[in-house]
Length: 267
Image (cartoon, rainbow, N blue to C red; front, side, top):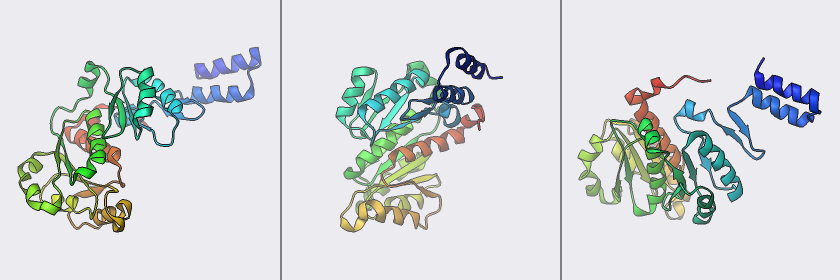
């Protein structure tokens, strides 16, 4: 029998441990990788399965909730990424975790871990190239770049290369072809990923943003344009989902290098 399971039963018989606490203890014994904070259940096995600890989506959470989650994740893994938070929430976190840093463009707090930990997670070859159609798309592009870096990728970026001035993009064609994975970030009509996917033989991830005038429907026009692209090799993430694009690019790069085979296969 699981030792933690037996211990919970012994305490129940000896001290009259309440049924609710008994069930919590039994659940913990059966799922030792899940930590119940009451308002959140932390998945500490995610790093083994996915290559990075559970990421905290800060929007909608209180600063106290974020701080409590951050403390547990930092203690268990030594790395952290909290997305979609403002400076006031970061100040609250920084007071408790001085090692944290803040990227104001990406609206994210993070800790990369010790130099030894960063070196052990780094992907040695290849790189992710972030293409940003316009300056207004930079916050989403920065979230994608930060995510990919934290997952061990080398990241390069080209800004303001949208199709409104196609010559600016074509002048960067050698850089596009040297990349291992490309994330093309665009709002408005969202044409940039389709153009790029037709020029290179590398995986291209289309990242639509909510930038644009009224008929762009807060990014829906860009999303639909990318989904309806006839360019082969283009995949698309959700509107403004820089985190999802950066994570997907890192997984592609890791797989290309065979690094995924070194981690244990978990359910």
